Length: 303
Ligand SMILES: Nc1nc2c(ncn2[C@@H]2O[C@H](COP(=O)(O)OP(=O)(O)OP(=O)(O)O)[C@@H](O)[C@H]2O)c(=O)[nH]1
Ligand SMILES: [Mg+2]
Ligand SMILES: [Zn+2]
Image 1 (cartoon, rainbow, N blue to C red):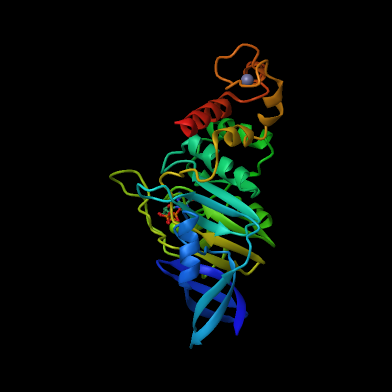
Image 2 (spheres, helix red, strand yellow; image 1 turned 135 degrees about the horizontal axis):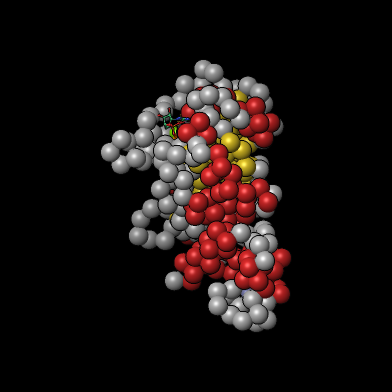
């Protein structure tokens, strides 16, 4: 007889399914793996999935069915063949975590994460960690476009505790995912939010200035103030999966209202006359940096 549970951790080919107070190490039925392959997905299940599984031994089981997903955050998997990988399913919130410094902030990557969340219909928030190292004026200027586009944009420090209460209020009652580059402090934030969590963290490499990919698996952690957060491994490049060029144009909420107003229906919003998007940029209704990301991402998608 199958029982219901939720996948809380994935490592390699094994999934940990939580059902009530119990946890089971599970494999997936071959049939599910085949179906995933046919959809060009590397894995039949993901952390956050609701599944039905049979118990095959003490704390062991086999996943029989995956319940339909409410949503999912997916990326293009590493490797030459085009395959998709679901990072987390059934989310209430994606928190894209970046560091103000160490590693340096690449604003294009912020836009990529937001586009992925918009495309997946998952509400998104930004968390700028290591605010203790920041030049406030600089970060305020960089983050203004996101605040104006109504994304919650928090400043935090896992070191000094700044912003943690605000982060707690954002997370309370939800299943969220922390994602972002390696070394920005995703695991450190969880440790700071929940004393005793004891997640492994590691300094960024003094040689490359990059994170050292300390977290190697995705896992949902229950926090005692009533929140669930999936910590994920740091991401070097967030490859788009299942997002087309036309889609990308529609995934910048503050640009979207102008799209139908250009002179030409085929407008790419780069050099066409009568472009409503460019006009909005010139008049300061759309931030230049966001516009540049928009054009860059749409053109990348076409090639
Ligand atoms: N100054 C400062 N350092 C921080 C802060 N948060 C984390 N760090 C340091 O940044 C380094 C990387 O932190 P991690 O928590 O391992 O980063 P991560 O994002 O989980 O990295 P991956 O697991 O590799 O993706 C550690 O040396 C932390 O001590 C912060 O708010 N301020
Ligand atoms: Mg980590
Ligand atoms: Zn246009």
